[in-house]
Amino acid sequence: MLKDKKIGLISLGCDKNRVDSEKALALIGDNARLVNDLDIANVVVINTCAFLESARKEAIETIFEVNALRGNGNLEKIIVTGCLPQKFVDDIFDDLVEVDGFLGFNDYDLLIDVINEVYQGKRVNYVGKNKKVTTNKRILTTPCHYSYLKIADGCNNKCTYCLIPKIRGKYVSTPIEELIDEVNNLGDIKELILVAQDVTRYGEDIYGERKLVDLIRELSKLDSVYSIRLLYCYPDAITDELIYELKTNDKLIKYIDIPLQHSENSVLKRMNRKGTREEYLSLIERLKNEIPSISIRSTFITGFPGETEDDFNGLLDFIKTAKLTNAGFFAYSREEDTPAYKLPLQIDEEIKQKRLKKLYSEQKKISKANLKTYVNKTIDVVCDGIDYEMQSFYGHFSAFAPEIDGKVYFTYDGVINQGETYKVLITKSTEYDLYGRVQDEFTE
Figure 1 (cartoon, rainbow, N blue to C red):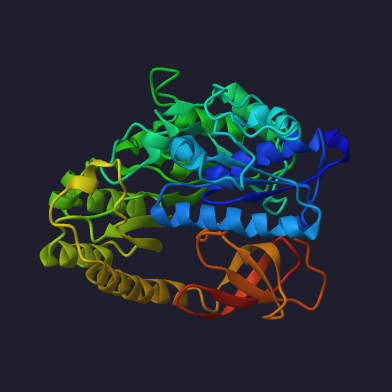
Figure 2 (cartoon, rainbow, N blue to C red; figure 1 turned 120 degrees about the horizontal axis):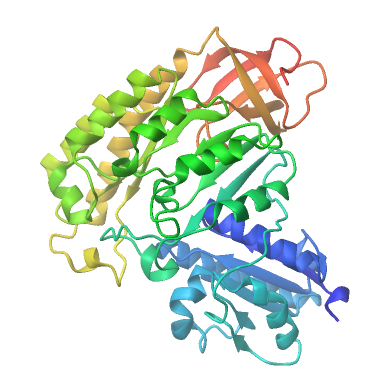
């Protein structure tokens, strides 16, 4: 029956959610016809995020938008998967009648069963029916030359502002051999991006010790993997061994994402974050000294309950001192069912936004000064695509993670192939992006 159905999928949220969506697409593709055009889809699967109130709002709005397509005569069923039903299905099942079936983040193996059931006239809730997604096949939604690899799910860190442990549960690593099989199924990958809520704790739950470096070394042996990038490395778990691997492994891109979230010790303590301002600055200095070419990215939260003007000015000073390559900033989002929700001295939203603006303004100056150093230099750039509005190709290089950081826009009179590496002479820089032209033939 499903062989005759056209099925589309919308993926919301983070890169970890994207990997789940890609596994869902592979399962669908084995049983039905996948389509990109939702206007012709009979079934739409919406993979949701629920980390923040804004993400939950986006998920609900997307459900309503998709439901409006029922009037076109093609859409018959809506299936909602992922974090929203995982945490809130008891709250939304009765009211969200637009949805025919619900599954949680571990239930993708049951997706086809759910679709078959809803076509029998049932409205079903399969959240929590499956213990683990077993498929290691994926249909990539990124450009074919880079891919994310989710090496673990859940989190044990218990940050007081975060819903992830309540949604995704305890930290669960995927065994090395399963990850190797998954990567082998992806084909040739120019850049493999390792992700988890905390990649640095990989393996401690199943091997009794952290095995991130072992995993990196095994992945580096694969001829199909040209380079590896690390995201979401918690500062207290960045070991001497990992720093040495970053320094010496030619396949490991000299880039690291360290979500610090704040700099001031009193705020970090209320957040239940490990480490101190002094330790963070020492780590950043050490990384820069031992790996001069390294790019360091981080994220920070402002407006956390009890953040005083002195705390905020301390954070601003930290940004000026650390001079990170890239940084993202967020206003604290008060989430029910987190310890921080009940903390006193909640910050007014207007104050949060003013502080957020100041942080971005300071980081913009740092980024602008950093990118200016690339002007009149030639760098290796991987082509990610074409920006037709700018009439330019665009791509990324070692200091820019795709889809997260800035872009390198470049021109060339000849043929450019997506996924190939080109030597680009940088002629201009802005606060976040670089501009240039190809000098030579591609390098690989």
